[in-house]
Length: 562
Image (cartoon, rainbow, N blue to C red; front, side, top):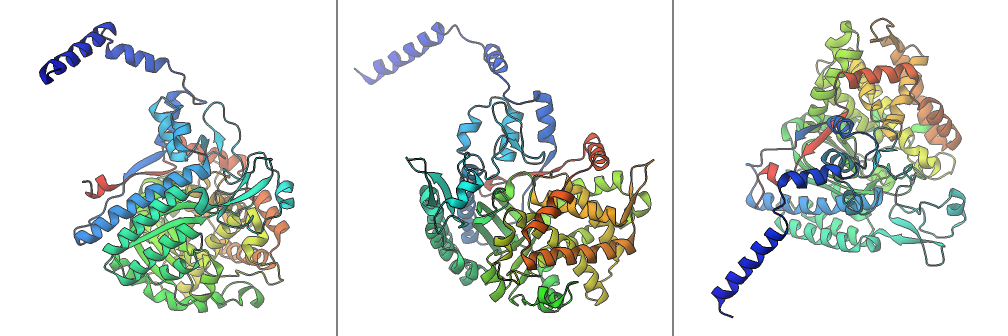
């Protein structure tokens, strides 16, 4: 058939199909879409309100000072991050498409993407999509029907590994699957992208780290790459990638979830923090606890840096967003070299301006609102991360690491330690004249306001539990008072100092003793939201104050689109 005749025939067929279809109008299609079932447990208007609780902000940055190779390198790192995002979906829920293909309405889809599943992370993981029950405590790391007793009887050397999934074989018995096997296609692709990025890296230590991390993704052996990352201090670009935190595993706290950050260094602010690295041993000795609980000296290769975050993926992007990083988590690295503590200044600034200040205008007494300051928020957050590297990593009585001894209660207790000891460190440094123009009242009142901000993450999160423990302890000790008429809170500075010291000591002793029962009692007794506070938090929602932030991010925002 001649080309022209074939072309005309195709056109005629298409016209005929269009006529047979009845020339369906756009309105009819819209109506059909509207008739599709709303799978949410609430109205679409209410779902939009849930989405709007996360104010959208742009993760943009000036990349003009970077070379073309560095910009292309960042593009590869973002592509690798997207693969970590896909893996985290599988760990938190299952294949992303399995859920999103069931949903037909924009706010429901968007809220599912914010939460990486059908469970509301800031509302105790309650389901917001019909047909789903309570979120499994072990997320998708374990079989949903597995009991704790079955796991205890399961004999496998690597069952507690950070990097294995627990599944059932054809006979229904438990088995382990290493991450590098379970996610082989995605991790192989990510490793290849890291190796391509390494070829473009201008900094030798960063190039070495990327190559080592590529190997780690393929082998689940992360120690060498963690050690290599500790040397990445002078590069303009930084990258955190892989299975890292174990917050998602609320069953045992054993399994690490995948995530990624692409970061751009703020050199001016980072230089201001250099002096604190050398003070780590002195700060460890100053902790408010008996000597046996602070005998493990932190490594002195620690790094305090300030960064602009330009991409989040996976665990760190689910629900409430991370604003600071303290890694590696490996106790071997922490003992030998310390940790790197990275402050994500742009994300921190967004949370301060759009959330913390508005909260203060509602819940902090007018006489103390002048003490709500970004510098205090920055310091409190920074020394929270410093505090993670202090205290004890190995129990003092042979129970192994603190993480192993406290199991699922490790994360809320560790976050509680970091919060309260972080504030303690600010006070110590102010008394040592190491902080310029320091007004401790700024830190105390900003700290109090930050409790309200973090409690809104819900009792299901480790950070939420940690903040509730502190709030209830402060309340019992009179560290603040609440005016019944105005519903505002006033900090009692002397009593807060005393409560801070006492709670810090209690947590450090629980960790050093590996006291699982004491940790359980602290979390379950104090990690709850009582009625008065619940009503105060509802006032914040009524005022339209966001709970957290969500990102417009990616190559298009950074001007890297091709």
